[in-house]
Length: 408
Image (tube, rainbow, N blue to C red):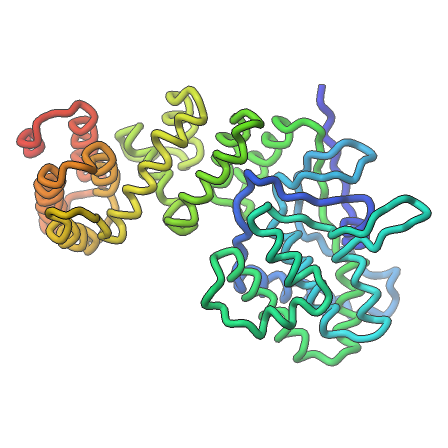
């Protein structure tokens, strides 16, 4: 039986030789905005000020949450299954602290960003945290390299993609807040974080066991979307040789749609498969109605998620491209977008996926769909009535029935 270990550690231990954190390529991108990063900063500063530290031995620990790791006992190598948002944000905060402080005070916190190495113990200098391959070079250059964070915040954000923009925004947020404090307060704040702020590290050497822990924690309200857990479910079952390829396909689809819309996509896919109103969470019903029907995870990504993500991008943004009927289709999609609900999207993206090359069919179908959606709006159909009708249309699309039958 695979053992699961759980223990609380101060940040001084979390960011030490005890752990070498690596974000696997199948993980979701770094996504915390200044809202989450600012809230973390406020919580930490508030916890320190609330306790009015006089005697360090009297300070109560402040818990930052859980991290889930694939890690063998006694070895530092740690694949992060859950917790990269907190770990990455804390490294950005340490980088800002090092930049704001000076002299010995600044140097004292460099070791929480990078392992300094020890020739007596045969430890090489290296970063404490390695992000996904596509994000790591940027992170290392601007956050883990001395002076990089101040240079980063002086650059224009226009050229940055999503992950880089999040890093830039949070670095700027932290630097601005720390620079507004006096240096003694910054130093006390930094000491409070490393000595009195704790993370609970849950580790197991088995990938499947780690995913189970990950899913349980997410289901109980951590800051992950259903698509993040489903990514672990799906990509975790892809063979090692193909895992990076399918991770990249998944993340390309997410990046093109945007994180919020990509999360919504899984609710629409659930509707296509279940053809009924949701009674449980998207996560539960996607597993029950979609994952249980699709055998190979590669087929699910290739034949379902990616094509429907492409269709959703076109439908949601009215971006259909063709030498014929494109303007007419996009005008109709624009009118559909004005409807006060999104229940029409599952049949729309399914039909576009199946008939992308037939502009006459698409134009006719979307005309009919827009008239139906408008009728439902004017007549004030209930959500149950709308779902029942759209479910029938999904069945019709799957059965390749004649377009004239949609009115029946």
